[in-house]
Amino acid sequence: MKLGLINWKHNINESIKNSLVEKGIRVVEDKKSSTYEALNEQWESLKKRSIDILMLSTMERDFNFFLDFLNPKKFKKNVFRLVGDFSTTTFLNYLANINKDNKVIIGPVFNGLTSESELFEIYDDFARILSTDSIEIDAKDQNNALDFSSTENCSGILTAWNIYDLLNALNTDYFNTILKGKILLLDNLPTNKVELRTILTALNQKKVFSNVKGAIFAKTDGIDVKEFISADFTELERLNLVYNFAGFSKKYVYLNKEIIIDKDQSVIIQKI
Image (cartoon, rainbow, N blue to C red; front, side, top):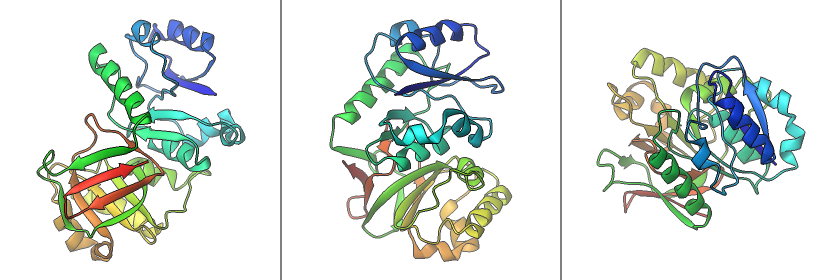
């Protein structure tokens, strides 16, 4: 089963939709969305490439709308190979959790402004990752700010979220609350301390951090997250914590698969 989610406000989408339908891809049009992700003007060249992929649009509508419309029972009966970015983490994590055979990969943002060469590189990287058994997520020699000082060597199943998506997903019918033993990667952190404190407090109240083994916090402008946690959320310091993750530029990682935090080598890797 293949699926394409597109935004309706671009004239080219009619031809894209027709091409998707011809290829056996079910298309869902979100007519209330104002953004445009994944499918763009390079479609004529891109559609010649033979990658089995779900292409997602930013989900501004209620997540329940999509799953109710698409029928979750069908998702459980099909195996997907899916790539998306941090604007679609609710959907990505849902599909990663309902079927262990799904290959759900999160990586760089790609949108209507992505150049043709960049888009092809993203898709080629996606195909390469599907054929490899080891992924380097981030290393200190590539990101000098990555801080391993608050963690021990550990491993766990990765769940990666846009922090706003995680907060919103907690109130949906489809959120998987089983986080025990997992390592939580949080991206798109607020740049305002009051807002960050509010969100982390809400996540704490929902016991999101109660059973996770560790957390990787993205770098955010204007806030020293490590200092912030130490001052306001000392209870989190019992976890394995990595700070200043710079996000995905040309990196990919599987959701709901094990990652290894190697403090000694200052590297986070994933072996499939």
